Image (cartoon, rainbow, N blue to C red; front, side):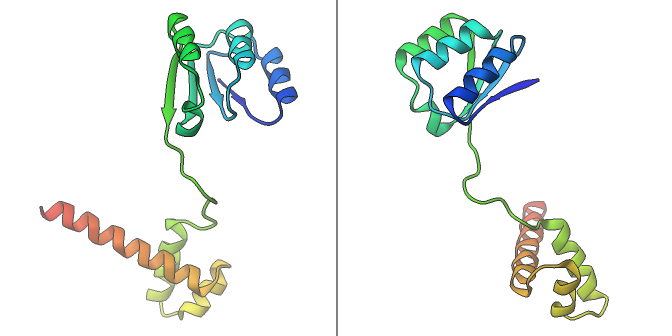
Length: 138
């Protein structure tokens, strides 16, 4: 199980008080010395996961203290921005509808997406297909 620390400081410290046996902590806020001390004292953390931006806010003292305690800090690169509303599956459904004789407008209406979104996903799907074909030929 993973303890996710995000939100207000009050909510974070309440979550820390409840999760005594957590070994993995996902840190979504900038760490303070008090927060790091609380993680060390109140959990059985062996690994802290954070983004690159949060990693940059760790002080050298925090990093050395955590490494001395045997806690690993894993830095992940997260995708920035808004998540997609549609995906490749929707593009594949749209492609099959269009190949079945429907117009783009009809396919988009059936999938409850705009025509522009459907064109975007079809284009993206075709680019991926051509890239995988090129990799297979080389």
